[in-house]
Amino acid sequence: RRFSDGGLAAGTAPLEVTLTENEQLRGYIQLYLSIRNDVDFVLSVIEKHKNLITWKDETVSGIVVLLLIVILVLSLVVPTRLVIAFFIGLTFYIGELVGKRKRRNRASFLGDLSKWSSSISGAQINLKAGDSLS
Image 1 (cartoon, rainbow, N blue to C red):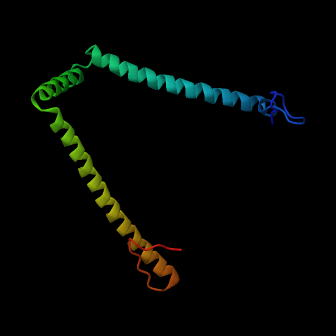
Image 2 (cartoon, rainbow, N blue to C red):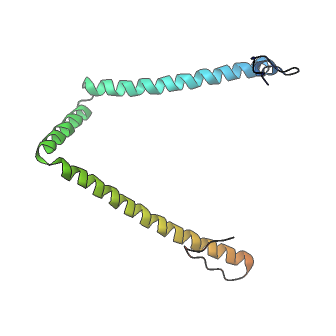
Image 3 (cartoon, helix red, strand yellow):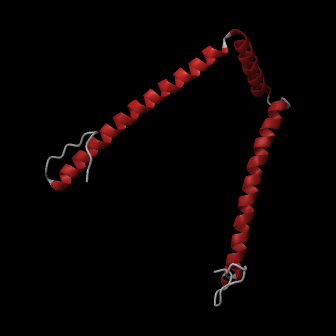
């Protein structure tokens, strides 16, 4: 425990002092591996982008350029308000699908819970979506 002036409380030692040398070494190795994995991930992402820009993989670079050209042509032809309206409509449609799936999963869960609770209690219990248990 540290005091406000940064000193240690009487009778307490820093965590590093209480660890054995092997535990400290293991901790440093884990820290090193964690940093190495993070650096490796960042470098692999940078390399993928570099390969895309320098046409190392011509197929993927060609697809990206074709996609950008299609987006450019569509932005010249299709009004912006239609694009925004499309994405708003798509968002509501996806929300409706998620809601239907949630209600279906809830009904299935409540049916299974009713069967399980009936088998435990011996009484017929039928749970519906609006029911609450207290």
